[in-house]
Length: 558
Image (cartoon, rainbow, N blue to C red; front, side, top):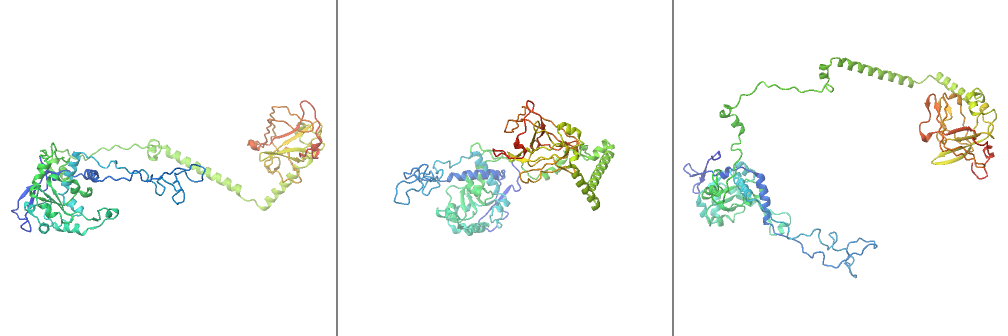
């Protein structure tokens, strides 16, 4: 069954009158003009076929290498590019061969054996030609391509065979005016311009738009000579239709003027949907998947609606299951008490925030001047009491642990780690009152502290830094009773030995932990205060060297 068409017959336009009459002859529309229009296939075939007319080009094989240049190698403070030998000219010493050099070869020199041409499947070529012919019968596509067909009586435009006997160009122009195709030819003539680019120097100087295409059916017709000199007008034989002319630039919709004999030969050349072609062996026209694209008219037609099932008006829609952990309304359906629990948690959180804010505001409230002065006076009084001599007499545990008497101790040596080095400084450790060290001949006092972090000075319950040094002497004062917990932990891997006249203590592991009011005042190993007091010698009783009495040593070490 042949595909349906809006106009199954096409009127043949006579050349004697200006317009066609009712008695004019009519020919059936060929099936090739009903073929599916595939612009993608037409574009692909056009691109590949247009490459078959390219002429190979390449640069000379010896270009850029017509010199005996060699690299100078390294050590010459120049690049390693080969350089022209010789002297006495500017050319000598210049770079050669490279694509970055003047007079050198190009990168990847072109070769004549490049893959210039493309092979296209013959069935695809025939499909593209059929699609291009089908597009010529659609006026909207022809207008979209830019052709002037406003005065053309009908598309496809078919004229009588008397046009094939025209020999003169003047007669051909007269015929174009009679059928209303001359405006399109004038458009092509007026569009002539000089080509942009280097093509103007290669015998392609002028470009112009395309006009109508004349397709004839009689071999050796004189129509070729009559129309070949009109700008933009092309002539082709119906048995040798070329896609490059049917769809110039790969765009379908060329304006074609058919002769009656050529129009009648289309079924024999391309065949029909039911019969194969007579000229092309085994070729059958591609049948479109949809003969009538008006879907709404087909579906709403009485023939289709009478056999389809009625519309379902009541449709049961399944509800979407929601996550109760994310959706509050779904949670309340499962657990109504969740609303009360949520409200209670929010109120509790608000109360906690309010209490915390009130506590902070209370702390940040500035005390009155009289109360602040009283607190400051109490602090000064406490500090004076802290450094007094009589405070240590009542602390029996501290006195017994130290094993000290009421005598005043001599000056002691302190070592301070600073910037990764040990700095020796003479430091006077003043322990006032009855808690002072005594018996230096039997006791050894050794202090290891940090220059920047000494937490022995307590002011108002907070630790402070060491005061500035004055005359190489640092005075450290502390109040032992202010420490609620005063715990010592010593770990030794070697016996502490005092070498005679050098006073060097060898202790590998010494760790002291201070707990102030139940909290550790030193938490980092880099800030541990290593502190030792009154070590008895395990083996011998060594007398305290005289250099610890405040005098400088003979070797210059403080």
